Length: 500
Image (tube, rainbow, N blue to C red; front, side, top):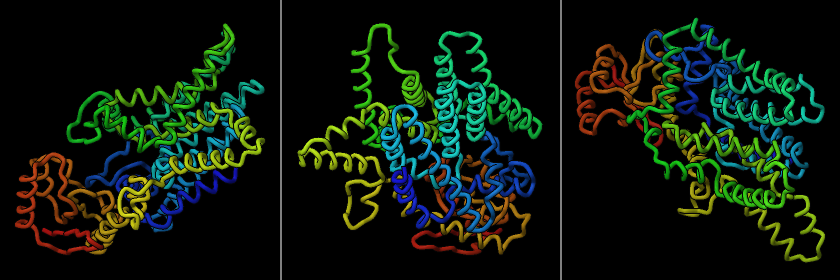
């Protein structure tokens, strides 16, 4: 078990060393956590009065407010908490694999999760997905252990942990649904026992949802209704300004295959599926097609991926829960113990060498390392693109915004509302100011914002609702109506600060 934990730590280490500046989404959550510390309520510093942060269920934001401070140390603490949750996911994956099959199955599953580039990347983000996965796996581990002694209290505790997963992020609801199916299958047609088990499992979730809905409604009924509407819109509506809603099925399949799972897990899942089909053909007449455990794993994996194709808003983070499940399927489908015994019992050195090389190659395919597609002297050529960008380019891109924020913190009054062309969340977090951002607005809305702007940050000309000609015209008007106050440079990035 130590080996997967060490490998996971090694994979996350480059993020600790190279990525020190907050990125866009991290700044949003750190801003809300800071406002909870000050106001006791989850508000974004968006606009002069702020905006309730109801995009997701709120548990992570409140947890973050306990350990995320305003200093660089506070930012590291926020990221380290996510790393600790990721490490817990690796440990729980091992324990679940051992419960389903044996310790070797657990080690294989934990190793595959520990080296997965997408999971490793997000195990240092100031976001709620990895803590959510930790709670999902914790609830599943308790449900599987509960089957050994069939105690109702264990189901209730599992229900509490799964409710916590939902309160970290609402997308855990699908996994909870499959856990409920698993509980029903374990009741063996005993109606009273089934009702009791389902009540124990889902009761905490119902209570948590009611508590959250009542709290959110009391805080701001309008903001709560708008957040629910955004959830529905992300499923069925098309927002042409959001590039995540314009992703086609083939492009989405490519992202799931290469960016989320990676070639190794896709190959491993294909082999596992063939093994399961072979077992179905050999099963005695009357036996179930799949064990309840495999039904839960395969059911959640396939349904989550299938639903993602039907949802308009396509975001890979919403599928992060399938990663440990995919690893568990591979770890528990293959009879690794007999395979290892077969290879090592024989005297053939060639067979042992081939097997060892295949395992190493498989783990490398599952890791952030890639066969270089560019200059071999460039580190970026050897890394998964998403992982490599975070390690090598994050600070090069965002540090100039940090410097701009620190400049504005010195130059502006604490009550000032700054306007930023694009990456407003990062600049405003380091400036510790309320903010407005332009890149999502249409031309008439931009004009209304500029009419009451004293400080304007031009960091990027990427506007979702404007044509290139309109952006150029906007830039000329800004130069006529505002005075250039400062030019902030860092490397090859330049940000201009204008003052009315």
